[in-house]
Image (cartoon, rainbow, N blue to C red):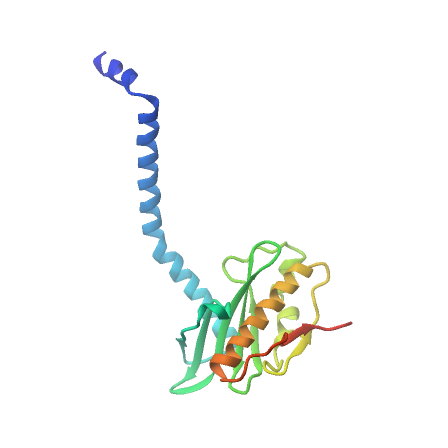
Length: 194
């Protein structure tokens, strides 16, 4: 009976405060436990993208100033020889960030393209077609310094533009930091006029 009276005397804000503190502690613990596996999963996905766009024995992360607008730049190496770069840039599309990972050889030619990462959420049937090989393969063989053009995805203009913008950011970064070439003042890759 006394404990019942004690509970009735506890103000509602105190009960809510206790619940909020317990919930915050549980969320903090969950974040601590899952942070490592999530980062490991993201790095594994990134390494798989690298292997698809620029196969190499090892990848060394390079420092990239924030003003380049890319997520990461890695030097691809076979032994001590640089064979190219893997660069990832993200631009907001229709459903959120659209990551584009390009492989670029030491000759400046694009060796591969992977669209999307673990956060890809473009519309199924339209924007999601950016992940199809028919779209991604358009980048292979493009001159990363002098440019080229690709076909946009019909009905997915926002996603296509996000991919194009991310690819241009990525190529500018490789040109300046990897190939030590001057920055392009215009778009390197454009949409074809068909």
